[in-house]
Image 1 (cartoon, helix red, strand yellow):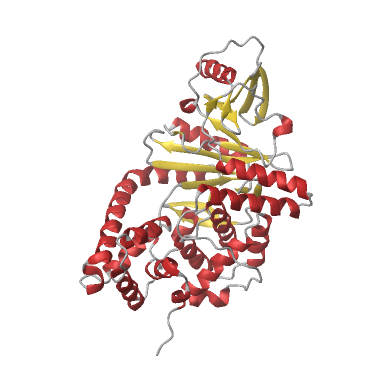
Image 2 (cartoon, rainbow, N blue to C red; image 1 turned 180 degrees about the vertical axis):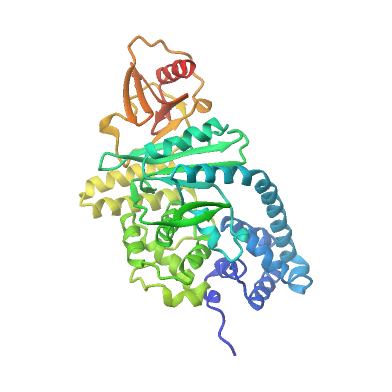
Length: 453
């Protein structure tokens, strides 16, 4: 009797996802997986598996695997047929979205390339797939080394009608070198019903509450038809692990991405491991590589053994409380590794847990706003910049003082007046906040500045 595929040694739904969500599925294994689904007595078996496949972002691959069994008993009725209908519905919706979004996404890549940006995350990996169209398509993630290099793209996209995202606000932190890093998210055509999104990343890649990893390497690539620098395999592998840590989710998409990153090349695993160590993501990397070895045995020789207990992420997104606890644990470990005492590390962990569990939506508060004053420019304080569309509706407040201006970064000015504070970027005005609380004086100041702009 032949040995079962390595993926059969994975637990529960992960074994099924690793079979039908592979880039090159084994027809016999796929048939066996759908036979098991057909025999599953649970009334929600199909919807449960669909949800896991959808969160793993491998529904296109799963549908292709199902269609390879077209006409067979395993897929023609019951839960397997129900699963296929769910897959078809999602992909039809995704096709309609791509038809609208791809032209704007491609234009953003073209402009980003002209301005010296580099692509990270999904679009940096997608061209490595044998059939790139089968890889999940999400946002355009463009990286710049610093804010001043990213500003021209912000201006270009705003001039083209892109608006600030009101689901994920722009944000800034500052690391120990006194330099800012962060992310600006822009969507098109409106914040209420966007169909394209660009995330501009500046500086190191932020992980969890107060961790970061340097992005170590780049190489020429082609994305959506345009030549542009893309993250190297090492950089992409680190981002995969770091992102999984933040999401607390084991995605088959990540396993497939690692497979195409590993295939046919020598990866500098030491750099990957040490970069993950800086963000306490080595256990995550260990779990991802374990699943990669079992789902793709042909990659085993190219993957280093890690003498560390792997994480235990699930294939369905963790609850808010579970995610907060995991981020707090990582924050504690990182602070201790930096030489902090137990008390300091415990405080950092407490703040991390609170931040990831709290409702951070903008709301009126009475405490005087300070904004990112020099003493508050730290890696553990995430200054979200709330655009005008999301300012709290509060009564106007009289401003008696004179405006004080400070340039945070090139083209990014912090304005204070009494208890109010705002950040100005060209014609855009933001109210900065950490916990969502905004003093009415800040809204009044921001309104005046926006009217003047």
